[in-house]
Length: 86
Image 1 (cartoon, rainbow, N blue to C red):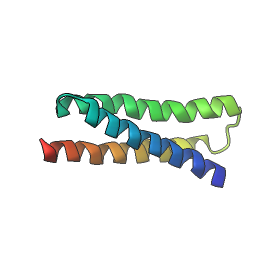
Image 2: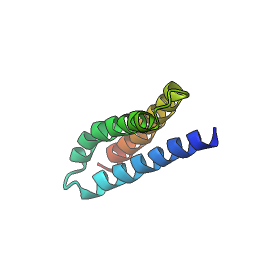
Image 3: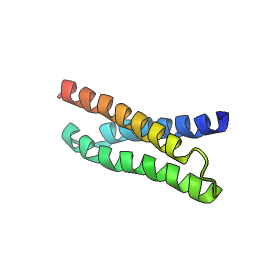
C-alpha cells in the first residue's frame, strides 16, 4: 500500500508543479486556467501508463480515483487563486 501512496503523492506533486508553472509562465492569468484541463488529463494518463508498464491491475481504480480527485482539488484551488488575484 505504501508503494501506491508514493505514486499518488508523486503525481499530485507533479500537478502542483505544473499548475504553478502554468500560472507563472502565462502572460495573462486567464490563459493559465486553459492549461488546467491538460494537466488533469496528464495526471490520469500517468496512472494509466504506470499500470500499463507494471502490467498489474490491482488497485488501478482506487489509484485512478485518488489521483484524479486530488488533482481536481489542487486545480480547483489554483483556479480560485487565479479568480481572487484577477
